[in-house]
Image (tube, rainbow, N blue to C red):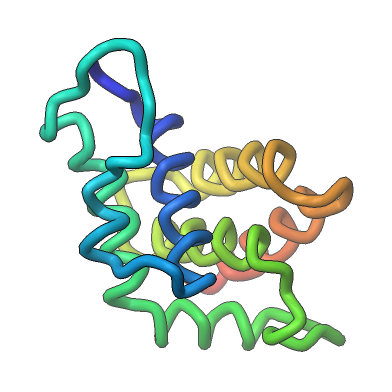
Length: 136
């Protein structure tokens, strides 16, 4: 079974979210043993979410700098963990996945924010990523 790019982004987001709480190591999270499905999933199907998750962690300092530089009247440390994980994932894609158009990256992040964030998260995520996309 293939998991698809959208579900791959969801898995990468969930791994980043869990990592930010510090309960699991990247090595544990990247195994995606917590992902449940009725059909068996090949290890190859997890390559995309692994790349997103590990790539985001590898470039975390640069990603967070971009986020901080585009937060206006907001403190980075006050971001809720879901929004932070979604934005980090989006910034990674904007900076390091040049083959994916920024409009798609932002749209996918907004969809994640609608599903996993607060009522207004999608607006906030959209604004931050749009600002970063203009300079990336």
